[in-house]
Every structure is written in structure tokens, then in C-alpha cells.
Image (cartoon, rainbow, N blue to C red; front, side, top):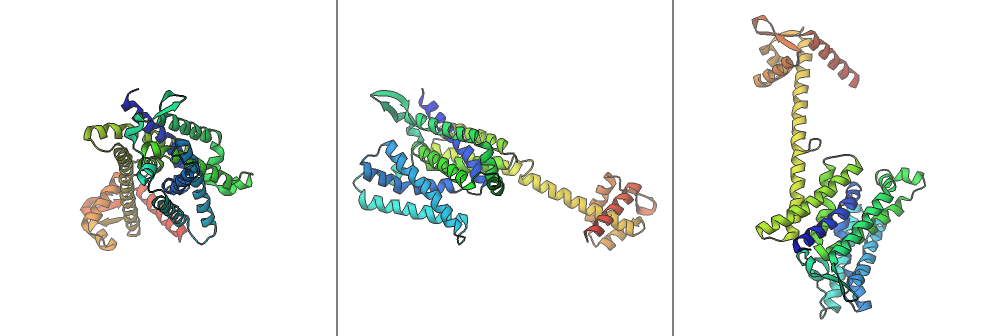
Length: 368
């Protein structure tokens, strides 16, 4: 297997579980939990080394996993006090645990190769070089095995508990009413996020993990309102960012992880601009249409109040608009068949225009 294929497959295997679980985090407004866990696990790795005197992958994974779950528990406990909001509780817990880890490393592990770069910021370019050896047999790149297992667990969790995760995310009250524990589902999700984050950052780095947890789901959120579609789109966007980012990094000779994150951000910006339902351009277009419709309806109601007939100058005077606004509103009303030009420069309402004016006036009266 070529080095290029190993790197791309590793990144795709990171993108899949991050997209699935990140979708639920985005919908729960807990996007930064992935970033929090990726930093808060540092003391777990250090303590695991003190106990086992080993920097093995399994030892680090266990220590990091325990502190990943501890992070979720502490965040929830702090939020439940009612004194601190969820975003603040995330910031408090992960900075405190990360600072604890830095203290432990600087105080007790100075002579050990246990620096922050080693335990937090893996390099995906090294994925083909780290092989999994069992009984002296080379089973291939360790990152593929680790992320393959993590991906299988995440996909299995989502498939088996899709309904439970959906109802607990959108309506915790209903979930509790039907006998499903929202707290249990919450901690199950946080545990899955911890395993995914810890399993991935040693292979690809924290930047890619956090980017794939947040950006592809946030992009998919702009394109659909169905959970299943959002998850599928997030997976496609994450995988697309991984593949495009790798080859663009090769072209421009830049960091692979950084370019993958940049591609994810690029897809988000394009979607933010061009999404047909929630994009900025579509929103501006809707606002312009609404403005024009409002001006047209206001003009026909004013014409109705003036006896269904008036000159453009009279409309300018009564509406207190400038000539350009009145002309644009008249053109819009004419295209809709609400007005027509009569002799002596007058504008008159059509039957359809009178019906529209009556309907607008009735709606305004009902609203007030």
C-alpha cells in the first residue's frame, strides 16, 4: 500500500466518525467538546505513564479515555449547578485539566519524551511509518487499524441507537417521558467522542480532529434539516476535505493537516454563501424580494385609499418616497398585474390589484 493511500485512508477514517458524532454535538450546541477533550486528556496520558512506565499506544489510550470521560462528567456537573453556562463550563474544565497536564509534564517528566507535541499533535505524514507489530508480524500501518476500529464503533453506535440519539438530542423531555435516560445517552455520546478524539489525534493531530468534528457538520447543517441527510453530507464533506486537502498540500508543499482543515473551512464558506436555504446570497435575495413585495403591497393599498387612481407624482407625495422607489414599486405591481397605466399619466388599479389591496388591509386590521 502506497504512502499516499495510507495517509488519505487514515484521514477519511478520521472524518467518518468525527462527522457522525460531530453532527450530534453541533445539534446539541456542544461543538467545542471535541476540542476540550483533545486537550483535557493530557493529564490522563501522563498519569498512565507514571503507573505503567510505558508510552505504549494502549496505555496512552486508556489514560486519555478515562480523562475524556471525566471531562464530560465535570462539564455536565458544573452546568447542572445552574451557576455556569455550558460554554463556560467547557472552557473552565478543559483549561484546568490541560494546565494540570502541563504541570505534571514539566514537573515530573522532564527527562521523558512526553512533550506536548508528542501527546497532542500527531503528524499524519508519519502514518505510513508507524506499523502495528504483533508477535513480530507487521500488520500494516497502525493508524489504519486504530481508526478502522474507532470508525466501526462509531458507525455501529449510530446505527444501533439512531432513534435514541435523535430523540435525546431534539427532545430530552420526550425521551425521559418514554423511559429513555437523556443523561445516559449524553454520557454514551461523550464516551464515543472521547474514544474518537483520543484514537485519532495521535495519528492525524488535534487540528484535523477538531476541524472534522465541527466544520463538516456545521456545513451540512446549512444544507438540510433532516438528521440522516445531515450526517451523510457531513461524512461526504469530511472525506472530501481529507482527499482534496492532501493533494493540495502536495501541490503547494504545505502541512497536510493544516490544508485539510483549510479545505473543510473552504467548503463551509462556499456553503455559507451559496446554500439555497440558509446561504447569505439566498438570504439577501429573500430580503430583497420581501422588501419589493412590501413596497408593492403598500403602493396598491395607498392607491385603493386614493380612489384606485392617481398620478405618479401624487403617489410620491402621499407615500413620502423618492421617485426611484415609486417607479420600482409601480413596475413590480405592473408585472404582477395589479396596476395599469391610464391616460394623462395616471396609474389605476386592476381588479386583481383591488383584491390584493383589500386582502392586505384586512390582514393589517386582523393583526392590530
